[in-house]
Each structure stands twice: as structure tokens, then as C-alpha cells.
Image (cartoon, rainbow, N blue to C red; front, side):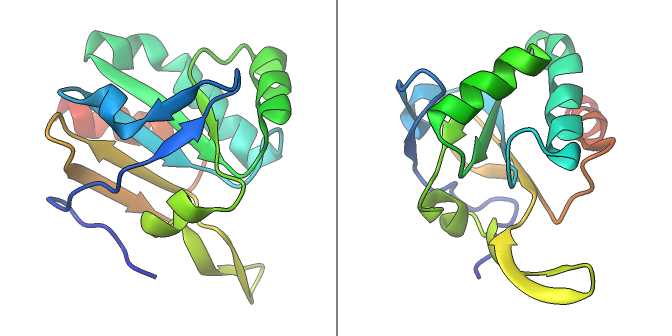
Amino acid sequence: MARLETGDKAPAFSLANQSGTKVSMRDFAGERFVLYFYPADDTPGCTKEACQFNDELAHFKKLKVKVVGISPDDAQAHVAFRKKYGLKFDLLSDPDKSVMAKYGAFGEKMMYGKKVVGVIRSTFLIGPSGKVEKAWYAVRADGHAAKVLESLSS
């Protein structure tokens, strides 16, 4: 599993959002954005992470940084998740996990002391030139949005 580092070119993507609209890397050309990968909609850790990004959205917007989440879930699950928690940012579907794999956000990980293959909770701050400004792997959901915001402010 390849891990992205600061300065690496962020892999291109084009995935459907909760409305079925394609969202691509090129849609963010010239902008900074946060791309975060999470295992599943409406699970405890993923809900906490999504809600905290949503709670901080005004701060991200003030810094002109968009937030986008990606999971293997389909559009229907994303619609329900966004509605249930009032999420105001796009959630993209990567059912075959191909984009996750390009970002090193899918592969072998430890879960409850066992090696498993799955989504590795990861976040990337991508700069206006399409390069990774910061990468976080195997993050803790709780408090992560604040850490990302803190790194933007420093």
C-alpha cells in the first residue's frame, strides 16, 4: 500500500456524490480542500468525524477550504446520512475502493488486535496545485476535524 506524503501529486478522482453528480479532482483546481476517507455512513466513529467536520464547516469556509468525504457507501446511504445529521458537504461513493487504494486509504490494518483488510480512516489536505499539503493516516475520528483546522491555521 502506497502512502502519500507532503508534496506528492494527489491522485485524480471522479466519483458520484449523494445526488449522483460526478465530482472530480479538476472541480477543485486552484483551491485547497480536505478529502477524508471513512469506512461507513452512520456508524459511531464515522458519524462523530462527519459531524465534527460539519460543526467546523464555517471555519473551513472562512479559510476557503472545502470538505469532501469518501466512503464505499452508495448515494442512497449518503442521502440518509446527510439528512439524519444535517451534513452540508459532499459525500462521494467509492464502491470498488479504487480511489481509496490510490490514496493508501484501503488495505491491511489492525482492528481489535487482528489484521484485517478495510478502509483506513485517512485525511488529505490538498493544495491549489493539486499536491498533498498534509496527509493523516489511521486517524482517530474524535477531534480529528479540529486537528485538520489547526494545521490550516498554523
